[in-house]
Image: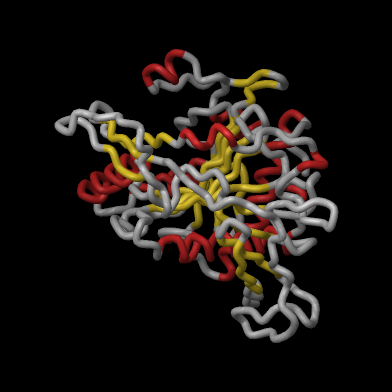
Length: 379
């Protein structure tokens, strides 16, 4: 059965930022949408009085590690752990106006008010001069979006209904496709951070979508490894890793007809899961109807297994690795990296000297043991 396309409503916030509502089943009389349902428009009016956004974000090239570092000092003033009744991601009401006008919603995406990258970014006029023979200094062009999974402040991704999960996946795919078309974009990254241990500053269930102005250094390493493997074997590296894990089976955590999740043999984090589609695709927009439906079910299962290991809401990062917007798309292989820094209840694996100073990870839990613990969770 073909999935129902989300109904999309677009608007602008008081300071000019774009906002998009994704609805699975708007009531009769809702806004005219991209699938042609006529009616009265959703109230998209932001009644706040906000000054225009100004983003002083810059990229600086590190010639030693050969990677970009972004400096975005304006983010020091971003919202930090507000009280539940002052959450900027809850729906606006007559009494309190938030980032999301229009009352109750399903899934919403909007431009971050405190972005690391922006199409309007400018290098600060601070009088700093760098040695041009070594360093490059450029505007932090790109885009940062917030994706809000639910208007229920107490929800988590793992508690979303199957229908809501599918709507989030559709929003990820739609925004990836749209952002890939921007001239500033070289790579789109969808991710979720959960838990104060990770550094989350808003507890409302949400994630982020970054449109980077460069291909990230980690993706470049992955693609170079894939290129070398292809030259040597004629095969795709990611497909070979997936086939090896499926054949071995010891680290497989969950699987269905279209996806397999496994703890990587060289896992860096106490609990780390990689989720691969069985078919090589470059990004989420390239997945099929049945693949997206199967993704929703197995992804929620993985989150619930993660929470079940210690019987608590595990802090985690869920990171979608997608192909660059233009380069090396034939080498890339869409996959999710889901990991937690919690090595035991109330014990966080901090990035200590070896990890932070040298990039040499030391894992406290053997990957095979972590896979056993995840599989043993009763759902």
